[in-house]
Length: 324
Image (cartoon, rainbow, N blue to C red; front, side, top):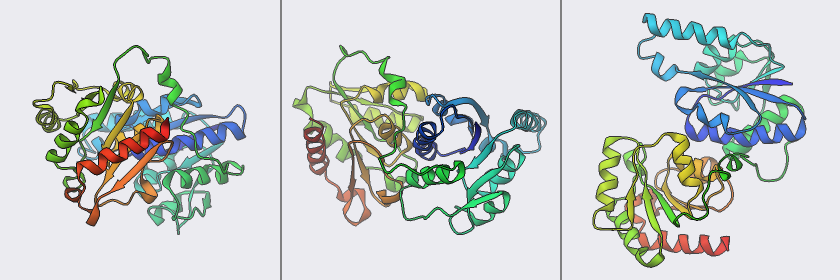
């Protein structure tokens, strides 16, 4: 059985789809998947053993210059690649009109997605042959697991979902390397940032832990912040700019991670690493960290300024005690 997944973005949403693949492989021996995903996240599906082919799409980039000769050529090449295969099922887990019209509609095979009441954008459901009612008041991982189960005809397991990607990185870990923690300090929205003074206070509280602290970044202003956070602490490393798989390798070897609400926090969860995620205006209930040893720390009044470093340090201690 060959299935096409349409789940293009964001990083967290792509990662949240992985446990559904694991369910399907356990329920249907021999099933394999192709996956349409935004080019920036194309590495992620390759980490799951059930994914045979990744079809990168660049809708985010294309829409900036949709009718240029280069973009038109890329769109035609993508369409030809997409339509080269006949699928037993096409599952649109994105639930948006954009993905349904530009991707799902073009694929060969019976099309599945959420119904009018439960799709992220109800109009998207008009592009599907089979529309499934997937209640919204559950975590995004569980919604996707339910969608796959109903689309492919098996019962959704009651156990916690398994991303099944941590083993991809286990063989690359060197157990003799230093013990370290990773602080994911960068996010896109200003109101999701934890104040730099709080980060520096937390770094100071870990002075006698024997751990190094690693600070990744992805853009120049994030690098500048990382350097400010590290200033004066000889046990803090500002990492070079890394590709996604390299960052995943760093996360996979961490003793623990402290993060704000960001895609890399979801990657940490997918890698089964202990993680304390600091939430301000966003509710972790439906889209927060999902997996083993994931702790959500919500700020009083939904303002991260009100979340002191000592509270984060306490959560770290409790998380590590639980892990032991």
